[in-house]
Image 1: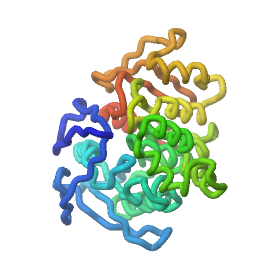
Image 2 (image 1 turned 120 degrees about the vertical axis):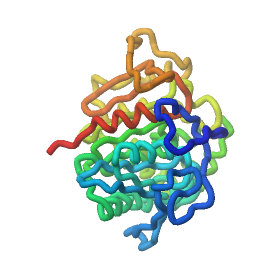
Image 3 (image 1 turned 90 degrees about the vertical axis):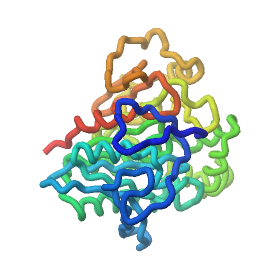
Amino acid sequence: MSSERRCHARPSLASFAALIAVSSSAGAGAAGPRGWPPDVETIRYHCSSDDSAQPALFFAPDLPGPLPLLVALHTWSGDHLQTLQVPFADWALERGWVFIAPEFRGPNRRPEAAGSELVVQDILDAVAEARRRAHVDPRRIYLIGLSGGGYTALLMAGRHHELWAGVSAWVPIADLRAWYRECRALGSDHADDIVASCGGPPGASAAADREYRLRSPLTWLDPGDDVPLDINAGIHDGHSPGGVPVCHALRAFNAVAREPDRVSEDEIAHFVERRTVPSHLSRPLDDPDYGDRPPLFRRTSGSARVTLFDGGHEIVYEAGLRWLERQRKPE
């Protein structure tokens, strides 16, 4: 997470495939924090888990409802002001959607953050706040995140699948215990973040192991969940500090997929080690939403799909947002 593509107001969404980075803009005022569209305002909302007032960025168009709601989640080391989320806000402004980007306890380097019970309730309360301030369509409440935001999106898909019309998770972490080992092997400081959040390394104590389990999306994802789930990873991800190996995306898909649709462990190892699609899985794929990061492998099972695209630790905004736009909860 060492570089960032700066986002400007009203960019062309098709041009974005940004590398994930620590990116927090400074100087938030009453509305339009630096780097954000002026129509986006800073708010505080009540979080029921500890009666605190937590910050978020919010926008609601002056349109008759009911309107779609887009909930955007910051990355592992980011916060609600992170400008990598600006394309999400631009999408909402351009299409007349309600938008909220909650803080959910900020960077994941302390017990209160990183998938804690506070985080889960903060996001639920952010949705409730958006619905209080605007006429939101309950059939079109969407969740999107990348990297650490993809991790939290997977967690929320598992823990509260009944809420979302669609969840799009990009380059996500699915298993904190496994990612700790991978970060240590690559010399990534995120290993220290995980220890600080969970109370020790894996195996240090029963209490720490419980935190690893409860904060990992794989604990909560289930084939019985009917939430439309879009999981994406760049096939070259996970080979340098700050990245996430594609095994996390594939195993998250396996957790919700029917058994015949799952990707085998041998196939997962091939994807990770060789950064190519096994020959017996290679199929022509055409999805213009991915632009210059074309899909190389895709598997669907029920309402879930996983896509490995030609890229690294990044998001293709157009692909994630267009997929969400097509999702509706049943009447």
